[in-house]
Figure 1 (spheres, rainbow, N blue to C red):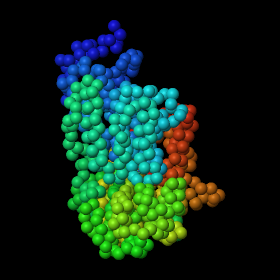
Figure 2: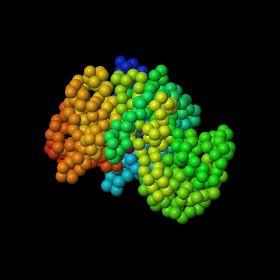
Figure 3: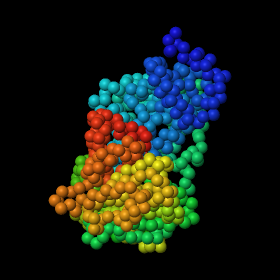
Figure 4: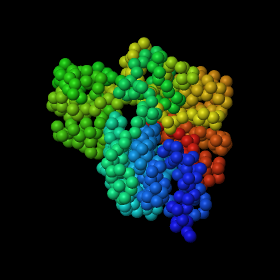
Length: 616
Ligand SMILES: Cc1cc2nc3c(=O)[nH]c(=O)nc-3n(C[C@H](O)[C@H](O)[C@H](O)COP(=O)(O)O)c2cc1C
């Protein structure tokens, strides 16, 4: 008898009524999903990996035989900071609660060839960088979309798929990763279960709707295949226990805190205006961990609002309707309208109202470059449109909260949250422009005034609870979370080793938190501190943190081999890429590995959560 022939009956007699069933029947969906992966691993190592796997449904009332005929559903999350992951977890829970046999996986943990083992593939995907996939999905994305990977992609004829995209429409490549996966699945022969849903910053409602819609459609689909779930009727799970709902304050219901300190921490003559801001959160009940961010709800500068009103010759007191409520145009523009970022959909709507060749070219060909240095008001300078107050309200998007990595630990400052940020400003042909929240926090607010904030959890940027060594690469304001990590470890008397790589233009003006870092060195909390002041070198050669990593290659490798966690925070355009290349070089040169092996090593670091990035 072959392994395939014996599977269902053998399983039934081996498990039913057995001790094992009583042990696993109370496991939650996540644990069951883990167990199924574990069993698959055992099977692979047993040398009989060609056995067809038909995982048994988690529903106790589904017979082994019935479940064996329908392949399970795969839920994949493609996530950088955890939003898409949380939605995938909710979807997975919802499917299980509705007797749909589903397996949850990270994009880091799946290969294209496995996709054919599922009846349906459900993807939740965010987009990062400039239209790029999150770190954990780079390989899977490449394998699914590249010409090179085509040979290894199986035919997905007979498979169904649905994709939920998370993104931000102020980026040029809105929800690009989700679009890529939807296309890649279709190109492999999978049929669309639902049209892709692409969510903007306020994604919660759409995501919840998508979960219910997908669940209902899948139940119908599975029933049509002869499966056991009841068609159409969706049991919605209570998501109250999810971490995303755990905090009472969020972007729609922020906490009114008090700004205690606003202090510039770069010296006179520095190229950068970097600030340290302390916010009092006494009695808020807000809880955060090192690695989390604060969301700040900021208001537009009055001068900017006046410039918009003047360019459009509109009356500040004119009544407008926003979300069904009456308000004055001025208060809408000050508190609600996104004026410092340019949204592509807004530009498109404006072009529909007033055609303009220059703006059309920007929209079609130069959008990415244009939005780097311009704001919505500059678009008005170009077009000088005739718009009514209500037309303006209808094309603009709401302000989105700005997120800042927290630079303090509750263990050290139980009633405070600290931020480290640059005041963003630049000039263009139409005037001087400022970043919304950085200007609001550092220039408009006075110490003692109120600010609306909430905590934005980042499950993917966390300090380990044990004493593993930490290597932290945080030039410029990228040092923020590492100040929090060091405070946290010192307050808890964690004896793990800590190594910080910090850089900025000049030692004299830009050594952020110099006194604190030196005292961490003295106390031993900081085992090593490597500094790259790029414009101080005598030979004029600029030195950056990645060079410091390479200079210390042997020791970096030793730390990695001792189980160190490697963190990167800061600029995504150059620094994060250069640091990753340096890391791969170190793995190659010190670990005696080739390119492919070094990438595999890095992948394993990611799988073990030992390579974490918070880049922007
Ligand atoms: C640094 C950074 C870059 C981003 N780039 C894009 C982008 O190019 N296109 C887009 O649609 N959204 C972009 N986003 C928005 C994210 O996709 C969005 O915040 C999403 O909810 C994050 O989900 P996650 O937590 O699962 O990663 C970016 C966000 C950040 C922080």
